[in-house]
Structures are given as structure tokens and as C-alpha cells.
Length: 439
Image (cartoon, rainbow, N blue to C red; front, side):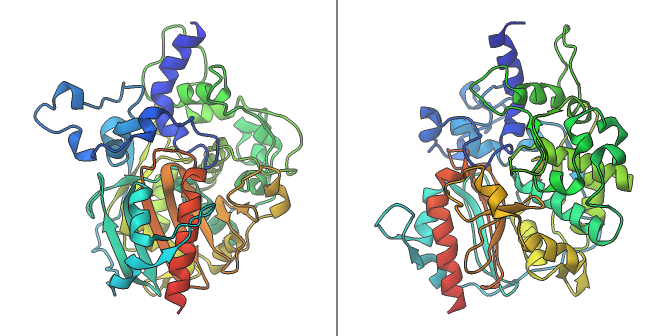
């Protein structure tokens, strides 16, 4: 098989993977089609059947790019096989409202400019599909657009990682998982891979040293091989490689010493998901449902994309409702307590909230987070308010500001995948809203 053919075959199935692989500079370069992705999502897949030029198929190499993106982010379960993250059978626990009409006019200055912008204007500029703001546990702002309404699910991309990190911290706090244990001792199949000699904590903080390339311009990059292995679709007749997430992870080799630098690579999260599942005897969807999704009183079941053997994509496969991720944010803000119940050990939240080592983070060169760090699959800004976040490409965010007692959740379909494209507008906007609420 020549390079061009291999790239074409794998690209079709990489999209849900690469959408969560990187938050800054790792995703595909922005194309003219993406830069002009202003067509309404409502034009796609309407009619019985839709007009040929309005059809989006899972076999389309560009189903997660350009004008199609604003539809696809709300319809992953129609394009790829998924596993349900059950909310259970009990009634949802309602969130209280205390809407603040003045919040829309809160103004700020985007990074690198001198022109003021309002919160409402930023909603449009960042191709926001939905945003919600909680202050002291109450909804003060909520708005939907694009493909999303209050009944819909939206791709969370790499925010999925943060939920997996939360599960791991919960097991550590409960004494069920040893953060200093070697992955190869917990999952013997990993002994011959780079992960075999890495500790659980190094995997959680992505300070592993892996011979693994995410250069999307290179048709031979490892990320394409990872994609093809994870694809649930039939492989070409001459394909001899791994056929699942777990099989691929066993092939990854080391490149240097673990623990020396932060390097954002999604395969860490899939390895952590495997460790969690082997430790508990449950898939991450089962465990998330049992330990978090049902106890928070979620109003919607969510779902995870899966590989050919039903393994949930721990690195970025979650699609969920906006208000349910707001509940997750409030759970974090409340030190693991929600609805009068201690759902997650406070020690788990404390460990996440303290952040990682900025010196290790600096080596990765994230320009929009000069003081940042990474801990347990969560991003830390180390600003005056000690804000931290779950983040995903195309603008997905759960932003938690302990000082302002504020949670912001945003779903978006920003045309530039890397968050460096929206951070100059988004991060000052979040701070401005925090300042407004603290007054």
C-alpha cells in the first residue's frame, strides 16, 4: 500500500481521534474551508433523504472539518459506533437558575489587541455552540446555537481526558490504585512497551517519554497508525497491524527517560483507561456511570465512541449535554460534593487542584499558557484565581475558578482545532466574567 493510500484510509477514521489529540498546535493545519466555516449547521442532513450535496457520511474524509464540523460535533453517535454512559433511572437533579442579563455585556480586551469585546460578541466570534455559567451553584447565563439545543449532546473532545483523570484520582484517594505503581505491573500486557516502565502518576501527568509522532503532515506518523488500529471499520486485506486501542498501546516504545518533561499525547489517557478498567473490572463508561454520572443527577445519558472490540475512547470519545458537564464543574468546585452527597473524595479534588510542575510544562512551549501546568489530565493556569480547566480542540472547555466560585462550560466548533486559536479571546473573557461576578 502506498503512502497516499494509507493516509487516505486512516484519515477517515482519525478524525474523532485527532479532534482530541492536541490542544495547541498538534491538530491539523487550518484550511481555507475551515477558515470560512460560516454555513449554518441546519443545512446538513435535512430531508428524507437529504439532497446529495447536504449529506455527511462517516466515510467522508472531511466529515469533521470545514463547514461540516458544526453539524458533526452534535451527531457523533450517527457517524461512529458508541457505548452509552448511562444516567440511570432516577429523576435528574435540577440546577437552580438566577439569570443575570447584564453578564452578556461584560467587556474585555482580547490578548494581543486594543479593541474591547463583549461576552456576547465572543460567543459568536468563537463559533460557540453552547455556553453556561454557574455562580455559587446557580445558572446565571445559558445560551445555545449552531447544532446544539438543551436536549442535544456535543462532542467533548479532550475534556474526556479530565473525567478519566478524575476517576484515577478517586481510586488513588480510596487506596484502590497506587500512583507509584508501574503500568507494566498493573497491566502485564504493557511490560514490553514504553508504558511498562512508567508509573501511574507519570501517565496521569503525561510526563512519559514516548517514541510517538503526532505530525499530521507526515503520512507515516504514528498517529495515523494509531487511528487505523482504533478504527471500528474492517481493515484492508493485507493489514497486519494492531486492531484495537489495547493492541496498539502494547507497541509504543520509549524515547528517553520518563518524568523529565510534559508532552501531550493522547495515548497516555487510553493507557490510563486500561489501567482503571483492569483495576476495577469495569469499562470507563460503566465506572463513570456508577461513580459520577448517576450520583451527580445527570439529566441525559452520554456516550463514548468505541473501537472494534467495544473499548471506549478514553482520550476523547465523550459526547454529553451542556448542563451535565456544568454539574461536573460544580462537583469539582465543591471539593467533590454535590446534591448533599460526597460523590468524589475531597482528597482527589485537592490533588487535581494543586496543579503540576510548571518547569516540566514549560518545556512543551504553550504560548497561551505561559505559567501553566498539567496534573491528572487537567490544565492549570496558575493565575491569581488559581483557575484550572478541562480542555478540548475546537474550543471545548470546563473552566473552574475557585476564587470567583464560578464554572463556565463551553461547547464550540471553532474552525481552528488548536485552542491557541480561541484562547486570546476566551481566556480574557473568562477572567472578565469572574471579575464581574466577584463584584
